[in-house]
Image 1 (cartoon, rainbow, N blue to C red):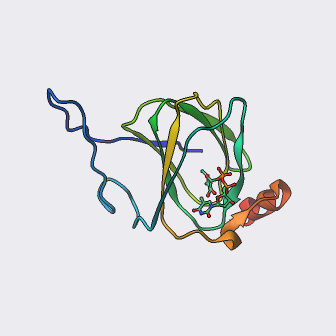
Image 2: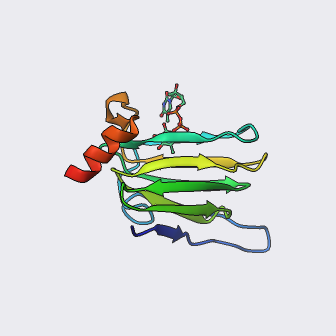
Amino acid sequence: MQVIKYAFQQHGDDRGQLIALEEHKDIPFEIKRVYYMYDTQEGVRRGFHAHKSLEQILICIHGSCKILMDNGKEKKIVPLEKPYEGLYISNNIWREMYDFSPDAVLMVLASDYYKEEDYIRDYDEFLRFAEEA
Ligand code: T46
């Protein structure tokens, strides 16, 4: 499984850093939704699903966390520790997010609106789906 981790361009000067993200330029899809999670409690593991068609970029804009990616054949663990790093997660990838630092803010840019019907929440169903894809 190929892990696509972007290093976004930082516009730094003596005031600090700034990152700008534009769809179809820095982000390989139209951004239809942005959400973020914070105040994640110690030991919490989130996710436990795949998406039928949604594509996303995960950016830990503060603090750190880890992402488990699973394509049904192979698993990879990707640490997100820098605000300029973005992890691309395509459809058909089971994901779990864990090891959040207390100050972690995990922001997600998504290619579509929230649609519960796009979620695959059962791991065996995911394996069948990944096999057919
Ligand atoms: C994903 C990972 C990385 C909404 O109402 N709108 C939204 O856009 C989202 C993302 C969630 N919600 C509601 C649905 C649940 O009642 O917020 C609640 C928590 O969502 P969920 O349990 O799905 O959160 P995670 O952290 O398990 O997963 C989320 C995304 O849902 C998912 O698409 O890939 O982050």
